[in-house]
Image 1 (cartoon, rainbow, N blue to C red):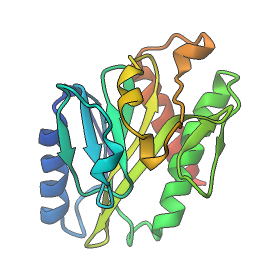
Image 2: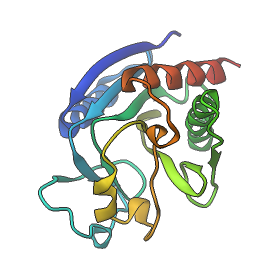
Image 3: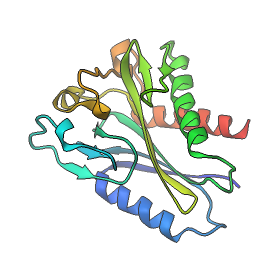
Length: 202
């Protein structure tokens, strides 16, 4: 069954999150899987296991307690976000497999720009030179998954300094722009999706 890809532009986090919940709750076995490409206005999000002690000095940026896995992260414009709304049972995928597919899609995209990146089993996500460049958080409900990945492209990384990203003190963040790469964030998202779909079809 083909995917439906939606280009959402820049959106408030909470609206898109609620829309993902609604989509997953009302989908049927015949509902096509969707991929949503989006950027968010500045926001901190806490995962299901997120501890507020990892919020150090968030200032005026809103904090939203959400239902994905993982700890705390930051979203802002210039970050490529790919949300996957998949029927995992239909695609015969488990949670570990889909996380690996998301990590690999980011790693392959970075390889396109000669940026060597790796995934880490002890701290999910994608890293370049021990700095985190890509994050993953998912929610699985009724065989459907939502949320997805974020890859830092060309954004203000400063707000990451006011949290312990993903629950790790002193974890440094990086982005494609730090390596001299210039690409529109929406184009970067499409490139990630291209690798993801190829991996899912292999």
